[in-house]
Amino acid sequence: MLTPLDVRRLDINAKWLGVDTSLLMENAGKSVADYVKSKYPNVRKIVVVCGLGNNGGDGFVAARHLASLGYDVAVVLVGDRRLIRTEIAKKNWEILEQMNFSVKLAEVKSESDLSVLEKELEKADVVVDAILGVGIKGAARGLAAKAIEKINSLKKKYKI
Image (cartoon, rainbow, N blue to C red; front, side, top):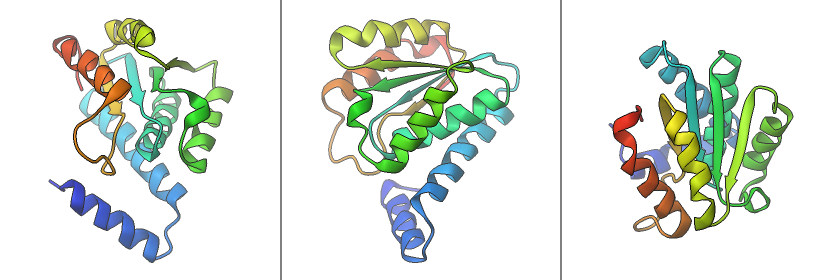
């Protein structure tokens, strides 16, 4: 098992070696999709809950691959899409917007929108948490913390 520090070191080393961030994101997202497919081959509904950073971008890629495998996929963005922090994550969100026939997109911009997340979680067989990554400092705060609480409060119902 890798620690957050281990993952951060791997990211830094990969970038130093010239591996593009988009390739890292693509590989991370594809790996998540492959894991879900191997671990839960008979589920239908997958909800990918994403943050505004590169971890969210990994989730966007995972959602794309899961949809291409035939799963019923919903992506819930914790935050406003206009505030996605990196260009590569924005690009992957835009790809999902073009896939509106096979991926449902929703945004939770405030606490009052948490009902949107809850509705999707109620239908989920599997939930992929792509809210926060190794860059987090301290405990989750704000809307991310509320979304995590909501996921955890319903976790007996689905697989994470």
